[in-house]
Image 1 (spheres, rainbow, N blue to C red):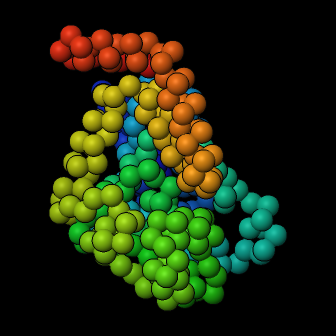
Image 2: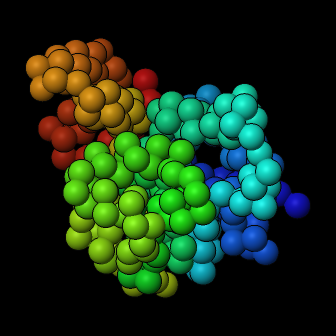
Length: 256
């Protein structure tokens, strides 16, 4: 049984569905390996325009597989493959949307934060409860959460291990949108289709500049933006997009 199901939609959107319901989609090593393989394949696929990752109506990902991790040593954590998946997702040039229903805890919250857009259900439950079992966030939680919501909110979440709702995630700036629980996947796929219909080179450049500039000075970020902006004027999609606008017709983008 596949632990991560892939569905290729006909509009350039790929849906990845976490598929370990008996363990609340916990991130076992086998699950991480499958997710890693999916993203390696997706990163090299020029036909893919947007990725949606989701779980089921009850759980996105409830965290790491603690039964698997409980007896591991520090050296096993350092030398193991547990972090390989995060690097592959981080390097993905394609926009990623996380559609979050139910629990997104620990590694699940971190997986959602590796996305570019988070669509959360009102009943979703986010959190970084690692301190409650004697460890701490280790998949980017301390850094990504702080950058998303600020130091003081992040400190409260990470030091108490408390859960917070989808509505709270939206209010603090973690979630991009919050919708009714039964609308989460539909809204994510709708947004993915919108992104997939746009020129992919401009979309990828925009994502790259935002992420690269986020950890740079303002001037460095502006320089990245200027260079990417100029480069796009050598693309067929730029010519097509502007000519279609002038001619008042729908453009056809080819990713060239």
